[in-house]
Length: 100
Image (tube, rainbow, N blue to C red; front, side, top):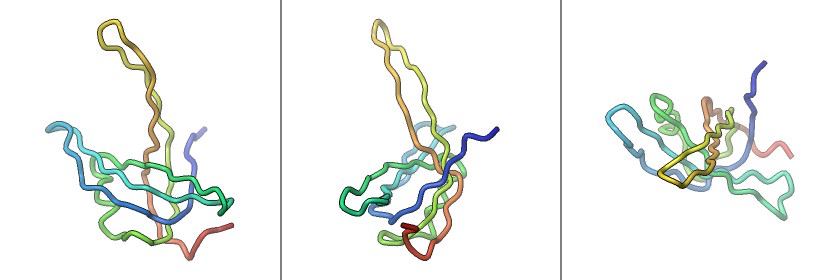
């Protein structure tokens, strides 16, 4: 069973690659997902490692479909703890426009 999802929209912003360590890098972008155009959702999506290159062929304003995985983990630092979530893209394809 796969927990992969797909979301479509328009690229609003693309950030520079962020090298976290010599073994980990990521790049983020903002996707405007607007099934209800009156209330668009601005989703921060990341690509990691060798998937960072996926963004090279896309520009701000371009409509795309993005295959994503939802990631979540618990963290602890001293007496503090919490949870974090991320949306990770593993495929990006050009689309003709928003499907709604």
